[in-house]
Length: 97
Length: 192
Image (cartoon, rainbow over all chains, first blue to last red; front, side, top):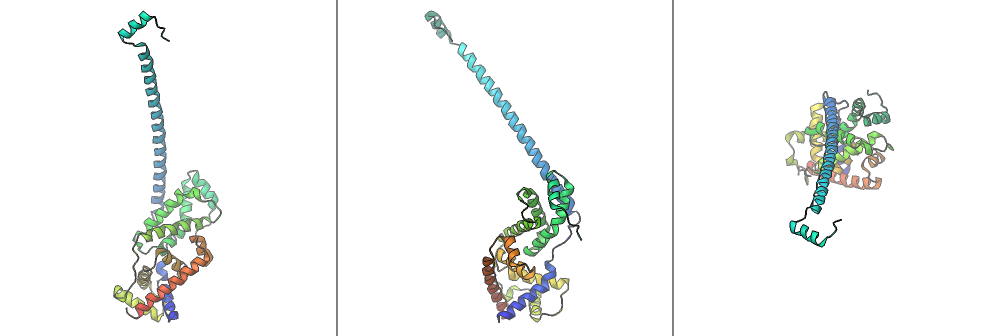
C-alpha cells in the first residue's frame, strides 16, 4: 500500500518537474531595473548621510550660539544691579569681584 | 552557457561602487535564486518580485559574507529563508479532499496513477498545481524539504548546509512528511 502511494507521488512529481524549472537567464529589463534600484538606494543612503552631517553641524552651531548668549547674559546680569542694591554697596563699600 | 566569474574580484569591485561588477554578480546569482524561488514559492504571480527582493537583500548584506563557503551557498540560504518567511504568511490547509480538486486536478491525479508518457507543458503546469495543493497541507519548511529531496535530488549534507539542520533532524522530518503524504494520497485514491 505504502509503496503504491510513494510511486504515485513520485510519478506526480516527475509529471510536474518541468513546471518547477526556474529561469536561467534574467528577463529583459530586469537588470536595468535592479541596477537602478541599487543605484537609487545608494544615492538615498548618501543623501541621508549628508543630511545627517548637516543636521549635526547645525545643531553644534546652534549650541555654540545658545552658550554664547547664555554666557553674555550671565556676565551682563552680574554688573546690572538694582539701584537700591547699588547704593547699599556704595554705602557699605563692598568690593565687587 | 554563462562564463565563470571571479567572485572575490567582483565583490571587491562592487564594494568600490563598480556597477559592472554588480551586473556580473546578478547574472551569476540569478539562476540560483530563480530556481529556489520557482520551486519553493507556491503562488507564482510574484516570483520576479521575490527574486528582486532576494537580490536586494544579497547586496545589502554582502558585508556579512565571510567567504568561507561559495557565494552561491550563502545566497541559496538567504533565498530559502526568504521563501520560507513568505510561505509562513500563507495559511496551511489541514487536509485536502477529493472534492477540493478541480476536474483537471482529478484527471491529472488519475493519470499519475497510470504513469505513462512524458507530459506536455500544459499538463506539467496542471500537475504542478496539483502538487502545490497536496504540498499546501505541509508546513513551509516540510514542503521545501520534500522538494529538495524528491524533486531536486539534493543529498542530506547539501540540505544540511542550506538549512542549517542536522542530518538526523532532516531524516526525522522526512519520515513524518512521507507518512503525511501517503495518508493524503490514500484519501484521494479512496475519493475521500
